[in-house]
Length: 334
Image (cartoon, rainbow, N blue to C red; front, side, top):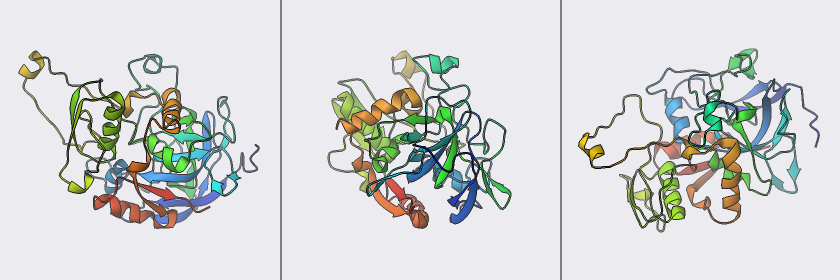
């Protein structure tokens, strides 16, 4: 498949956060072509994560505005529609990109895998030296510039993804090629919150917090064969029949959050371990997670509680802030 927009500036709709905590505004933006080791994606489905809300509120970190949020999405390199089912694919690729091409179905990911650093070559870590998450950076690594602009004014990226846009540009290391049979309005949630930690078979586990990350840990425990699953949440609406539970997972903490424990707990052989993105390497591991969904080994539909058109994206924020949604899918209207 060839793209008639490759190498050209694209004009498209985006949802811009001009100020902290203010409703997003649908604007027309210019999206520059991908540069060396970059790809430009066409987004048709994206989802709202609480991390987007947290940084949109600008609580506990240095504000960076205007910005295009969004980091859970399904996309493609191209401009195609198959029958009546619109899909999201790779639109075009920059110099040096060899493992992706226009037409590929992909998941953009907020943390990357360069495949060259010590972490990427390790079986124990997914904390890529080059592409690990950076919430403060609002520009591309290649040249320190944004690929988004409105009337010559740069609009900043968010965690290298910025999926609240009909088109976006990412480093190739933050793009996972997936099975084209996967429905992107479902598997887009694997780009972040649903890819979490798990546990060993037979363990009894407790999970505090039954938001998307917590309920995804529930699913991980179910698949791993936990013997007993206990869920704890202050919101009674978060308890759904048959969801189960898992090990304690911490999502994105507030700046001043802390917890403490007595050293004797470690002497009693109680381990404390964190996990980042479920310890998945985005490019190497996400394709197999998508295949688990296609093989009916992994459930995703139960996480999706709402869907809104792109023009009503602020409703997704309202649902999240009221504690009414787990994941709200935002449907682009092209």
